[in-house]
Length: 278
Image 1 (cartoon, rainbow, N blue to C red):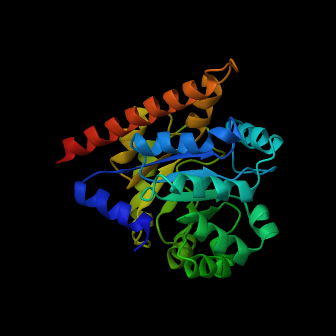
Image 2: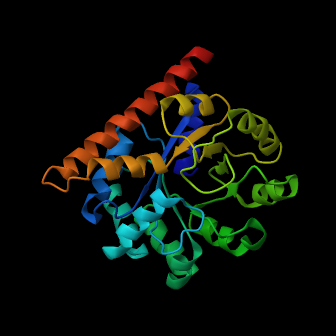
């Protein structure tokens, strides 16, 4: 059983919903990445999505685009991201880590070489934004051969055929993009999400995480009522930007503290909502 599957089984047994924060590796500073990952894990994250910096992140809004630009400007590569995961694993052997990014860095490394190195580093799942399920059979097979969960995106426009195609390949969980557009948008339609989840669950037998447009404890708790997990990305990147704007000697400590407090607040809101359902 994978770490991701075990995590979701434990959450289900406790009547809880998953919290999946996203951060870009190498941002705000490459040396802070592992400490920030521990801050997430220590304050309620169930799975960490670690973004691999890329020069043309077409699905991401301006906040995450800036994070990628900052990390790339400091020389952060896919190999360094894998080193970050390996360093995180030296102190944390239980929190699943999912790499999220684009095909180009993986293909430059080579799919098999990437899968081997990701497994050795302690990665648990891989989500490649520009790998459509119809063209991802070899990718999914290579991931599974190295005990990595291939994770796929679904959207409000996903048809039954597309959902069924994802269902054949996906493991770990699927990531439902709750709105049309790029990350960081704010027009979250809770009724639309609630209506789409049952359609997805008719086809997939893995948990459904929902992201895009979730910016605070209130919206996270509302999504937690209909989904298996909540994914938060742009709000975290913005928070780290704000915490390090002054660029002083305390920037690293402020970033860790700010991130820890934010994630802990989301965790409390999700758990309180779960408690009221019992």
